[in-house]
Image 1: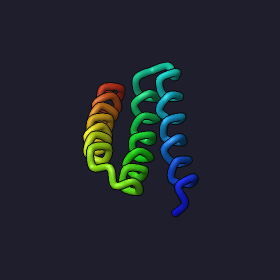
Image 2 (image 1 turned 135 degrees about the vertical axis):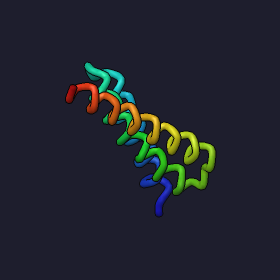
Image 3 (image 1 turned 90 degrees about the vertical axis):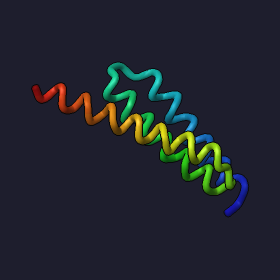
Length: 76
């Protein structure tokens, strides 16, 4: 894969992550951040960056946990 395409994936994840910080509401922020972290994981795999993969995988699980918690609390 070309370096320009790999960098584009990383920048795409960055843009999604920055967009998530401008959203209103915790649910939307966490959902978009989860998507951004999936992009970062893919980017980390492409550049063989284990710390990025590990950190973003943990973030995905944390966002998923909180999204589930928010969904359960809204159903009460």
